[in-house]
Image 1 (cartoon, rainbow, N blue to C red):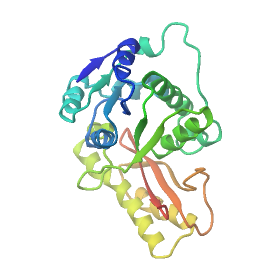
Image 2 (image 1 turned 180 degrees about the vertical axis):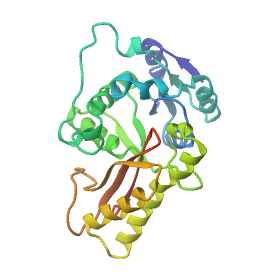
Image 3 (image 1 turned 30 degrees about the vertical axis):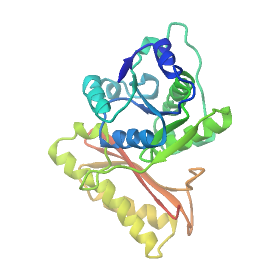
Length: 280
């Protein structure tokens, strides 16, 4: 496995054999089973796999959150080597944003909702860094997890709008045995908070059960999630949503399909989770 920093090193390895297909898994490191499931999917569908590891400062709107984000590159590389990854690109901030850098990509309407409404500037940082990753690696396919559902929607929109020549592959959420969606942020939870965090999965599962039983009014689904979340003393709700899976606009009345999602603080750790209903 090759571990490189510069774009020149990256491209030399990427284009050593232009006939090969490449899968890219963009990450911010602190890898867990969710990331590794993306690597395995990329491994199965491409000749070569590249993983980027870069904690992108421009997508954090909270300086303390950026400071606390775990950085475990040595362990990450050990995990990736065990998965048969051929290339790890771990650029520095100076490489990604050199002196004089002044370009930002803004995806419009879809970023103003949900996470975008609560984290100003977040998706401009995401879209910009992902575009840079795509341009540097030029992968055949890029792999993302459904856990960051809005991020996936934003990236798909950007790829369509800017004519990136690659396929976006979305993979299912990977959960702990007790249902908590895997996240690098989970390591910041103390034991009581870790137990309390299970309320996210429980509230989503309850709303899915309501939808499956025929109670499909969007307001009812949101109220169902909110009731369980508010009953947990350690949870502080940022938002709950029952939105159109494509546009992310909030739904009203009976729904045939929906993205059920939420952002919840457990202590001072902000967690997100989602489930889809009525979507093949």
